Image (cartoon, rainbow, N blue to C red; front, side, top):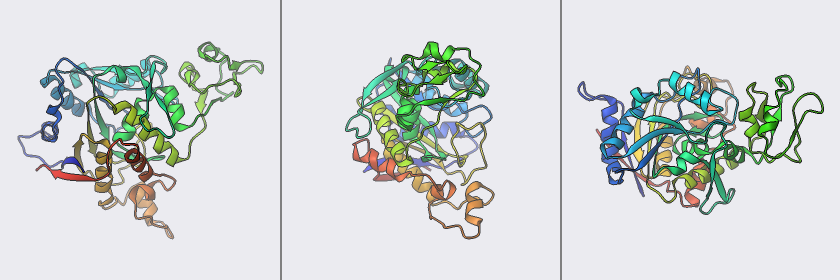
Amino acid sequence: MSKVYFTDFRTRIDMPLTEKLKKLCYLAGIDQIDMQGRYVAIKMTFGELGNLAFLRPNWAKAVADIVREKGGKPFLTDCNTLYPGSRKNALDHLECAQINGFNMVTTGCQVIIADGLRGTDDVAVPVPNGEYCQEALIGRAVMDADIVISLSHFKGHEATGFGGALKNLGMGCGSRAGKMIQHNFGQPRVNPDKCRMCRRCAKECGSDAISYASGKAFIDPALCKGCGRCIGACAFDAIANVNDNANEVLGCKIAEYSYAVCNGRPTFHISLVQDISPNCDCHSENDAPILPDIGMFASFDPVALDQACADACLRQEPIRNSQLGDHLAQKGWKCHHDHFLDSNPNIRWKETLEHAEKIGHGTRDYELIVMK
């Protein structure tokens, strides 16, 4: 049984919430990790432009301060996204992070995009006991770190039910090719209406799969290896991945990628359960929260952490003026008695935790230790 530490968002007049988070981390044993002189990757998401539910930079600074207090060298990191948007390459990604408030002054450490300029700088990492993936393609800067701390915004998700520590580490640390593998061993497609025939995608393609015989870019599925380089190369959002796994398979692959990131080195995991939007922070908007704010959780076990956060959410009363509340108020709605499933009925989330436990990544059994 793993230990998960929890505290709510109540505080005293002389105790900022960021200090309360630091206190929780120390109580959970973060100082047991030898950080002296070591590179410490703080994995989080910087939020898509237009989204306001992502974690504030203040939380990141609290974690970075702990690392510095212990003699470590912290940096914030994330990998480029697979989909077109404001984080699809390192330049746009860094600009997005700065606009959303993440910089050396506000966080006390640098921001490094782990998989490089175009999302192609990755390392093939073995997946212990992997059933769907024998190796994971992880952003190089994540794997170069000596220690990994996941700082997750726990919220709903339209495909995985919720996004917590496992998704932050698994999907979040995958390079563009790694994300392709998790979503599907799929291949991107060209939207000819958006193609400007600049031929940049063909120059980046390592498989000679892109031609222009029709006047617009065309990706030959017989040659395409699904690396996703062309997605990052296109400046006009004309190329995207259109294939998706069944959500239960997606969740299992996320669990395996997360294990690949964590295996063989010290890790620590923090989740803040607040602004529980129905969908991911990768959206350029965030709908109203489906549940009230709950609190902060920390653990050495990301599986137990996600289970504890999910259980805490399931005990809450839904907010009426929300996507979840609207669904439950519909006449004839078949209630699943599961807030994540009732918010996004096509999702699967239990399979992710079950598979993570099965392959040895952690346990769903936990002891909840409450810090007042």
